[in-house]
Image (tube, rainbow, N blue to C red; front, side, top):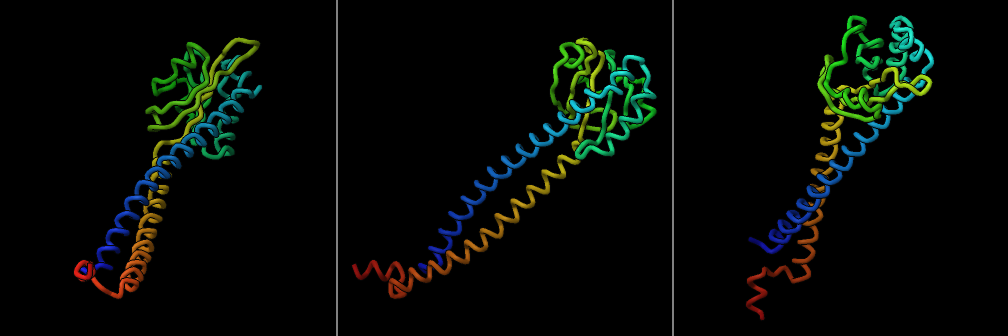
Length: 207
C-alpha cells in the first residue's frame, strides 16, 4: 500500500472516530436541552391555567361548562401543548380537549403526588390519548387545594423531534467525514511529495 494511501486512511479514521464521538455528545446534549425546554413550556402553561379565576370558579361550583370553553380555547392558543386537563381533588375531569372525557377520572397513574402533596412536577405516562410528557400544577383557592391542571405533549411528537435532530447530526458527520477524507488525501499527497514521492520502504533503504 502506498504511503499517501496509508496516511489518508489513518487520518480519515481518526477524523471519523472523533466526529462520531462528538456527534453523539452533541445529539444527547441537544435532546436534553429540547426536553428541558418542553418541560418548561408545559409547566408555564399549567401555571397560567391554574391561576385562572374562571378555572377556580368552575371547580368551586363543580361546573365543567365554565371550564371547558376556556380549556379548548387555551389548547388552540398555547404552542407545544397538545392537551389540557383540569381535575378536582378526586381526579375527576372538569376540563379536557374531548367532551366525552368530562366527569371521568384522569388516567396515567401519575397524579398521586399532585393530589397527596400539591407538588408541581413533570412526568411521562400513558393516558387515554397515548404516551405523553405531562406537567402537573395544583389549583388553590384561599390557601386550600381544590384541584389541579395537567398540560401535555404527545410523546410521538417528541420522538419525531429526536429523529429530526439525529438526522441533522448524522448528515453533518457524514459531510464532515467526506470533506475530512478529501483533505486527508491532499495532505497525504503533500507529505509524499515533500519526501520526493518515495515510499516508506524506499526511505528505509536510504537510512
